[in-house]
Image (cartoon, rainbow, N blue to C red; front, side, top):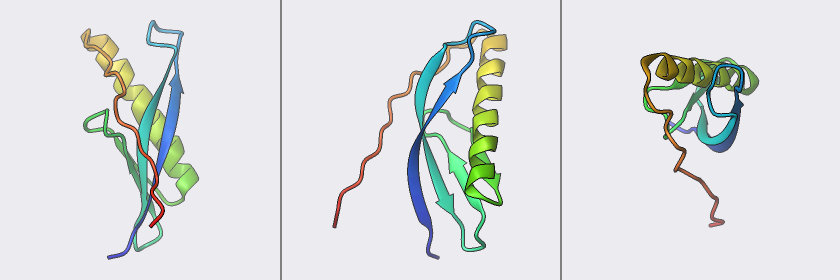
Length: 91
């Protein structure tokens, strides 16, 4: 099972409802054998998205993160501080 994996830093913004104005969260994108895309954010447990295209997956991931933050805010929970990063090594 061969997959193409890519890391991407997704910046989320929302200053209208008291949430932090901006943080960069690492998002891992993987393309499946069927050509569809999946994404997850290591700093945000349980937040993931799927899409037919990479762009659709990115849009859905942005929405999933936003919804996650809104739910955390409503619960009075802390929004996780991003700690993960990614890099590439030529081999």
